[in-house]
Length: 127
Image 1 (cartoon, rainbow, N blue to C red):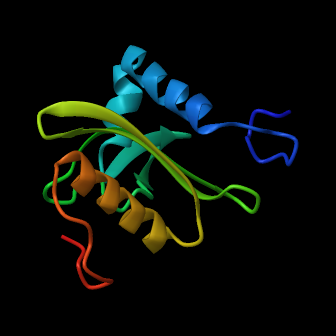
Image 2 (image 1 turned 180 degrees about the horizontal axis):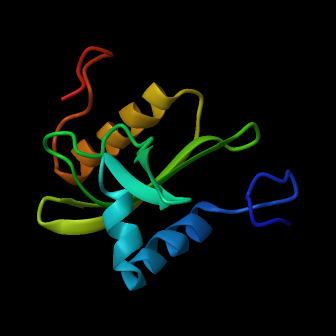
């Protein structure tokens, strides 16, 4: 309905988000910027720092190749990312998390599953 993605009339599926993520491969600059903790952009001649809201970017053990976070009341907290795990590249789309921490824990559970590791043992297990 609108380019911001914030209109309640906008609808997207997990497959739609995976396609958006796949498109980043055609734009290496977008992939590079979204896989860094911070980046600086020039706005009106001044450098402005931009911080990545994907808490997993730059974290030891994570090889994130591109990512996009988002939030609306209808969709909850969402995370779309391309990551490398166990020698393979995967697209991960998570939707509907109630909090940023839940989004990160969901991503951790998926990453462990992709690596063939056991499930999380509890809230304190965030490695």
